[in-house]
Image 1 (cartoon, rainbow over the protein chains, first blue to last red):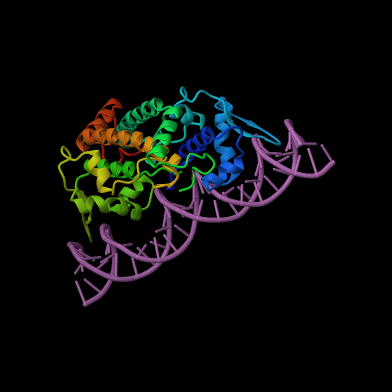
Image 2: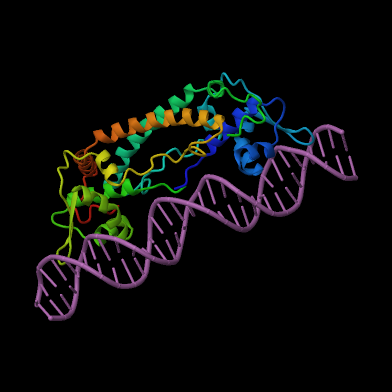
Amino acid sequence: MRRDSKLSGVLHVLLHMAEIEGPVTSEFLAGMMQTNPVVVRRIMAGLRDRGYVRSEKGHGGGWRIACDVQAVTLRDIYEALGAPEIFAMGNRSEAPGCLVEQAVNAAMDASFREAEALLMAQLGRITLAALSADFHARLAARGGDVNPETAHAL
Amino acid sequence: MRRDSKLSGVLHVLLHMAEIEGPVTSEFLAGMMQTNPVVVRRIMAGLRDRGYVRSEKGHGGGWRIACDVQAVTLRDIYEALGAPEIFAMGNRSEAPGCLVEQAVNAAMDASFREAEALLMAQLGRITLAALSADFHARLAARGGDVNPETAHAL
DNA sequence: GTCTCATGTAACTTTACATGTTTCATGATA
DNA sequence: TATCATGAAACATGTAAAGTTACATGAGAC
């Protein structure tokens, strides 16, 4: 199964946006992420609806962060994406008539729900600002290029 | 993404086997699970390699549980299946050169690893016997049909 | 022996879905 | 009004799980 990388992708976009003054176009972000501008718009749509980012059309348009990065967590972002399915494993069938399958589902669901709750709690503890700080720590550790426009390259 | 239901499926098969005396054919199990005999053999192969079940060819052949259901846990079964991918979400790219992506991956990996550890611990607590007991409790609660051959039906 | 039944396995087909792409409408700025 | 940007729908592609086919192997039944 190919793994859904929307959350990973949108965080990548947000952190790059945080490094750049002024609006950034979908095309520029897509170039950084080696993907398509439409894909960028797609994953950003949920964040726009929640007010985490704003988009502007026309000349000088593009995307802009519109939230407090100290307050917004990875969990918020995950939910803005529509809370996509977390697990690659699942029940063969929901609401089965077979009592064996009901017993199997009940046991698995309970375990998976607990793991999901822990994951959500973890993501709820990480703010965008914390992620950005980690990025800057890595940059400093590499004695790095602090030009935001080129910091993306290897 | 379509969710991997091998674990759910194999547990279903095992619990049905536990209800039936003597060997059970792949075809019979496939009928119960509304799938194909080859699919059954496929998911059972890992369990056979670990000695949790035995298979016999020819007349009167089929599958038979060959382990202590009080001792084997859902985690054991999960591992016998080859420990398939748990999460439907993942990083856009592993080992990226981009420091932003490294920061994103590190944060996400840490959270997902913790959730995975908890899930494994949960599954390690549930034995096949416990699942079977739950099934029998459901059966009794329904005042049910105790014929193992037909207990599957709605 | 040989017929039938069952598993073992490889190869192939189908299906679902995340992602990528094309296209055009809409709005903003120069 | 020409250009640049997002918005969104429609379509194409790649991939992996699940389903299917085909045939080899081995174990009773006769």
